[in-house]
Length: 101
Image 1: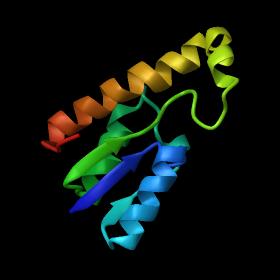
Image 2 (image 1 turned 135 degrees about the vertical axis):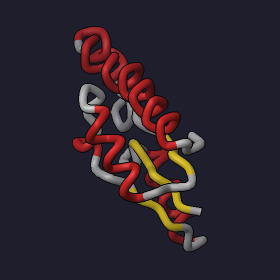
Image 3 (image 1 turned 90 degrees about the vertical axis):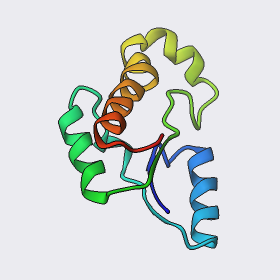
């Protein structure tokens, strides 16, 4: 098993990484800044180079900050990019590379 993790800096992601390390499961968890939903080609290249058996998306706008829900209302574009466009881009990548998500 080889997992490609998106949004691994979230509380859920950090917990998953701890479990993966403990169980010696291979994974790659690139920094959030590497996931521009407008650049699907770069995301596809990054995922393809790692050749994961599965992709796990944990990225969300409101992680790590309870006040982010209020900020989402004033940052609608950023919220949409993280919570809607990025998952769509990742789904396209997984479909193209035949990787379960």
